[in-house]
Length: 315
Ligand code: ACO
Image 1 (cartoon, helix red, strand yellow):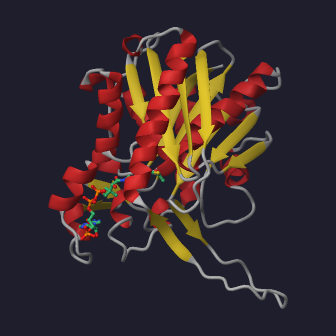
Image 2 (tube, helix red, strand yellow):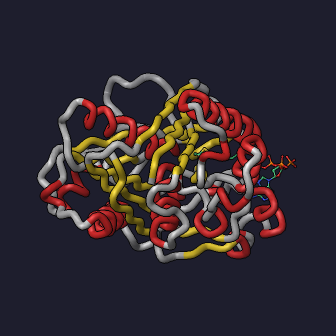
């Protein structure tokens, strides 16, 4: 398969570090050096499903494809207002597609996992055209009284249209269960039979553990693929990494011993938008000509679980 179109949509509300310091004991002087984040886009009057549909429509337009030509939609999403129906089903109706669709929750690694699922469909000869949409509102998962977590995230949607081709060189998925490091708990509806204690807990994170996992997993996944493909780090033209923290990106860059120019970033202006991060960055790099057809690119992401994944492809 190959990616022939990209799109993204982000909320209009921009929240700067200075705005956060109006109601939190924090500052730009703390946030920026530790994370690389200057501001983030936060959902206000938008609905995530509308951002998702908008990203999908832009990707279809970029690919020169109509929604009715899609054979499958995969949507990566951790949380949205609907528990059911699936977000992919809502997107399907909004863009006028008629194909089957599927939601996955693979935290921030969702785009890579979605690519792997799509690749399997292509190898089985079941699809010609696939839409992947990653839509996330992590700002609704955090407590906005918790400066440890809420300053890190932003919302948005990114999408990619795939068609038949031979551009994927390799995909590596990993998982290492560690449920106390990064988690959120929601209570369900009560029943007359529930006797256990339950409480909702906003997104909790052991930041330094997550940081170490992120660097280890991402460098491990990329190195695995490079070795398997008989490639050196220098053979990859651009590394598009999950935009969680500029220091994580720099650590991976240092491990790979590659120059800054190979690591485009947008964490400065978007924060961490979970699984939407990679496809939003991909769309920006596609539209502003940073990545060019025929180049080799690598994407790598990590998230709650822990899970991670990387892909190397010809663009
Ligand atoms: N403003 C001011 N002070 C803060 C803030 C804040 N926003 N947040 C935490 N602090 C304080 C803490 O209370 C703590 O204070 P204490 O030492 O008095 O207890 C101190 O700052 C912690 O400072 P550091 O240990 O220096 O923080 P660190 O360098 O570890 O940076 C950070 C924290 C940015 C969270 C870092 O650990 C990190 O980026 N981890 C990875 C996070 C990440 O990538 N998460 C998402 C990945 S998975 C996914 O995408 C869902």
